[in-house]
Length: 54
Image (cartoon, rainbow, N blue to C red; front, top):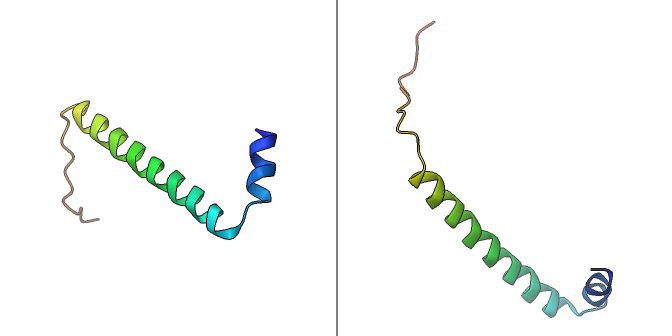
């Protein structure tokens, strides 16, 4: 991991943008997968979103 950090630290700006973009794409894909999985495993309980008067 230290080697990767050193390589990244000494890379040019364009390469850093490419790496950041790739990581962003991976994170977005994982978040979509997690959201889909959560939808599949929903308990079925429906929440009442009606505002309550106090």
